[in-house]
Image 1 (cartoon, rainbow, N blue to C red):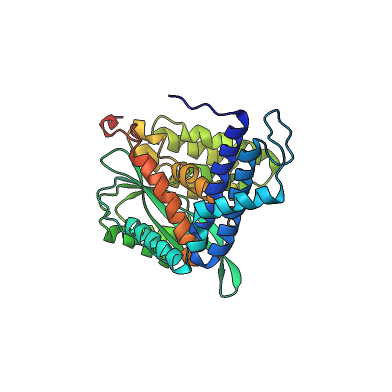
Image 2: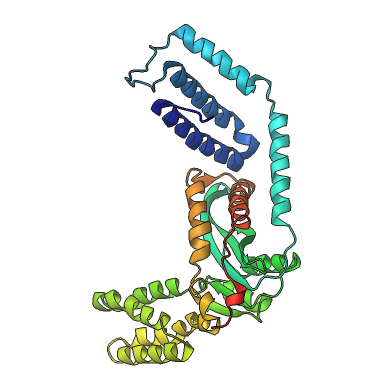
Length: 351
């Protein structure tokens, strides 16, 4: 039997889903210390939704289905009903603390779960704001995506610290190895501070592909005038689109020669840095499109994190940040694991 809902009810349910998601995210992020505020907002939401359902209309909304306007007695009756349904009056701070502790234990178990063979590895970082020592600091959130024998993307790990220094990146990569990460042949990332040295120390046998998107953006910043900035991106795309490594290297050499006299600093930068974006040509042709940039981690992970953390603005602690970020990544990882479509098909290795 198919349930029928009015337009107003569908709108209210949509509001409920969005608002409840925001409340849950704040609860996950803030933990038990801010539970009173979270439940106050949850209670206000429940009261408004209950009022709208009773009246069959939103606040100040005139609809044919509207059933009148609430009185003080009506509001009181609904308040008692909502209180009873939520059970707020019997919820103690110790119960909230236990629930938060269980959540943290589950997320910690996920972060520490054993890994295995991973051929391709994506690494990236983003920054969130957090209170530390009485001031607001920018905190680096490192994340790793891997592709293994099951041909699916998986989120391998996450780390939170006050910088992208080598010691942070190195500790993060070593933690992945300690959990069983093995078989990495190819790493994609931007040239993050500290990552280069850490990658060489921990994953020295893997080929490194510098993200072509970030390379092109850096080239634009190094261009000496507006005219060159407009065309340098297109010129690099011609190199990325070459049929093989030899043709890409020839196209790069021509590009460098073309700027040697008119923009010598740019020419030197291109000659030194762009070859780091050509490692993808060592891969099977069918794999290159997905493995030339770090966009798979930026679009699927970083943008989702940004969407979910923007409501928090400033995290009160590292624990709060790690809790919310981990919860978001668990959702993404479970979605990827259940995806029926392979991200990389290993049988297509013949170029």
